[in-house]
Image (tube, rainbow, N blue to C red; front, side, top):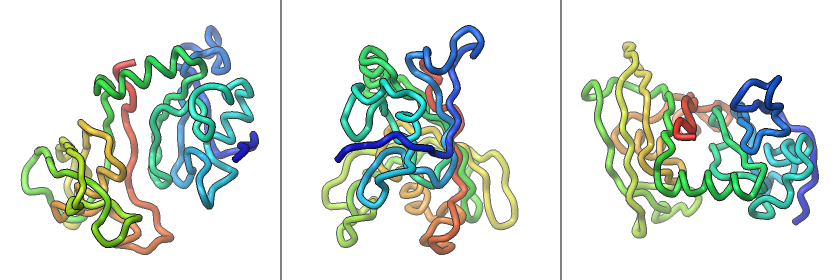
Length: 211
């Protein structure tokens, strides 16, 4: 499937001083992904993705990495906002991929969840895999699952919800929403609790502190 450059709602910035190192020269620019933006083309989303926008700003990106995900080392769900690091060279892609594989990258998020947490902090260790009935969903009750670990602590608590910061030790698909739901504290405004039109309250904080 050919991927065509095109506009996307995103902002590209370099890790260092833009005046000294413009985004187009930086080997791994940072992208501020807003909620609602799909990271790469897939069935139902062939245009208007972050990758389409990257190709628009960085035409040479097409030969870096997988055909459908040029320069993409990690991704965020469509309805999650946060920072992504994109590789503009093969060397940068290899280096970043190794950091994610070796879990030297710290991935922190903020999430607003229903109810109060049982303690001030904790760790959720529940394996995640495909839902046994609905294959489009992820679940902790999968017949074939992989280990998943999420550390969390409470930032602020209100009468009906809590703001928590989470640190992902693993990177399973939909890990945060699945783990929060599994302990009875689903993320506020997820489709399962508030209808598909509302976006979940989930924000990425420090995506790549090991870089």
